[in-house]
Amino acid sequence: MQRIGELAAFGTAICWTVSAVFFETASRRIGTLAVNFFKLVGAIVLLSGTAWLLRGLPFPSDAPGSAWLWLSASGLVGFVVADIFLFNAYVMIGSRTTMLFLALSPPTTALFSFLAVRELMPPRGLLGMALVCAGIAAAVLGRSRDSREEPARDRDRRRLGYLFAFLASVGQSAGMILTKLGSAGYDTVAATQIRVLAGMVGFAVVALVSGKGRKVFAEAPREGVGIRNTLAGAVFGPFLGVTLSVFALNHTQAGTVSTLIGLAPILIILPSVVFLKQKVSLWEVLGACAAVGGTVVFFL
Image (cartoon, rainbow, N blue to C red; front, side, top):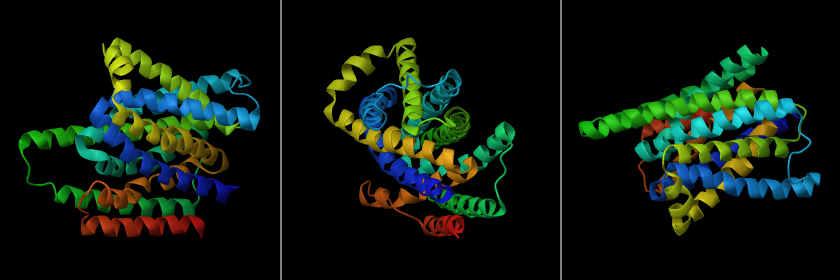
């Protein structure tokens, strides 16, 4: 089952790659709060239908109190806090650069996992994680070298985007550990439902408190292109991606899961070139090769 868990984690990376392209496009049209709220609305519909078919329960009414506690906390941290930073970073520095910064998530998750559940990665996992992180770091350096000459205003915006991307990676790592604590021994789809429900409530509260309720709930739904991209991203992100990540967390170590999911910054290079017409540097190619080498280590 450990190999299946690792495959699920790699599948999560592919889902994150696809959803990031959709969400970047949508965020520029209807705003980050609207995208975050409606992506979870779409996800909860899909998850509830799946749970009904697989479990006969469209709602996780059989979840113990501890699962509700930990998974709700995970939804608030991993969705609301992390994704507010993540989606603003998408707008400021683009999805490809933002995903590169999520390479910080694996070591952070491994640290949190050790502190929370005393989970140590085996030498093979540590070596694979080191190779993946080195590859993604090389890609980050190549991206930075290409952005040396730019106006001060754009440079400040880029730095703020980097900070938001870093905070998003920390939030995602914390969310993973909370998910592992709450989903152990419980159904994967139902656990994801709880996380998504908590995230929906959290984003609704943020929209109302920040005075953006009308923009999110009334104006955004009328923007067809933005909503379509949001719902497409919801299929690959909080539905397939999150479900696969929860399954992976229950069948292999959190540090391993986070490392394989961390391949998303490399996987996103191809769609960035094909769909967003972005240039790719030699450093990014070398980084991709190193990251692939790290993935191979996991499956030896």
